[in-house]
Structures are given as structure tokens and as C-alpha cells.
Length: 212
Ligand SMILES: N[C@@H](CCC(=O)N[C@@H](CS)C(=O)NCC(=O)O)C(=O)O
Image (spheres, helix red, strand yellow):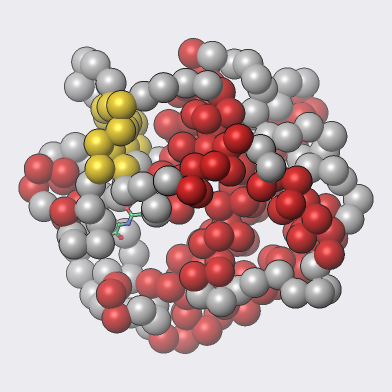
């Protein structure tokens, strides 16, 4: 099996960090998103929506969507538990994964994709033309900044995003923070809990994927 990805893109990073924490080795194949390789027919035959990452199994079947790829490996090797161990933990990790994606990652994506010249006519990750709407960039930035405050509040009362244990939600938040910095959404002195949490996560081995 192999994972098609683009090393420094946020969604592939989520999978890289997850697999690092799980100590799972998979072959990676690079698809250059910057020069549009992901929108050429070879890759569209693997993932018609053009996004990375995509996991191709040995039988040829393809699983796209970062969280679905992580879930596949989690089902094969549940430990360490990154999607929660108890029913309560599982619910909380799922809740925070969705909140980080919907309230954090998506607004940053909207901001970047509706403002950057590099994404002209590609305002959503899809090979078909999608025009930019500048107002969405503005709103995305506002929502992402709002989320910094919300997640700081959560971390002021919890060691990790979902509670007492490190989980996929921490990986998602860590990737969100890096992605958000691309559009200049950055924690300020008002986000001390978030800044301290980031220092803790930076020391973990999964954070080393940001060095590659
Ligand atoms: N929801 C998908 C999003 C995949 C996605 O948008 N990936 C970005 C890289 S972070 C991409 O492939 N962009 C290529 C493009 O926009 O052309 C996931 O979770 O994997």
C-alpha cells in the first residue's frame, strides 16, 4: 500500500503525525500540488477530487480524506489510542476533531483559497473551476481568530484538547496552528494556554514531521 501526499501540505501532515505516533511505516509517494500534478489524469484516476492525501491499498482500492485514512490504520492497530479508549473519550475526541476541522481548518482554508493568486479559480479542492469570493477570505480570517480564543479557553481547563490524554484532536489542532500561520492567524498574548499547550506538543516525536 502507499500514501499519495505532498509533504508540507496540512492534510498530509495530519496523517504523517498520526502514523508517527502509532509507529506505522507506510510508503509515501509525492504528488506536487504546487505545480498542479494532483490535477493531472494520473492522479485524478486515483482521487477524482484531486486532494492529497489518498491511501491506495494493495487491492487497488483508495481511501481519501485524512481522518478516514487515520481511522483505517487505527482499526488495524488500535494502540496507542489516539481516537480515545473509553466511550466518553471516543466521543470527546470525535467532537473536538470535528470542531477543529469545521471551526478552525475550514475557515483558514477559505481565507487562503479565496485570497491567494495561487488558488485563482481553485477556491475549493476540486479539479473543476471554482471562483474566489474575497468576502469569504475576510470571514475565514475572522472565524479562525475566533476559534483561537475558543480553543484557548478549552486548554485553560484541560491538559490536552480532549481531556487528560493526548489524542488525534491534539494532532489536528497542531496542524491547524501551522496552517493558520500561513494566513497570519497567530496566537497572541491573550492565548497563553494555547501557547503552553503548543510547547508540550512540539516536544513529541510526531511534531518532528514538521522538520521534513
Ligand atoms: N478533506 C480532505 C482535504 C484534502 C485537501 O484539500 N488537501 C489539500 C492539501 S492540504 C490539497 O490536496 N489541495 C490541492 C489543491 O487544492 O489543488 C482531507 O481531509 O484529506
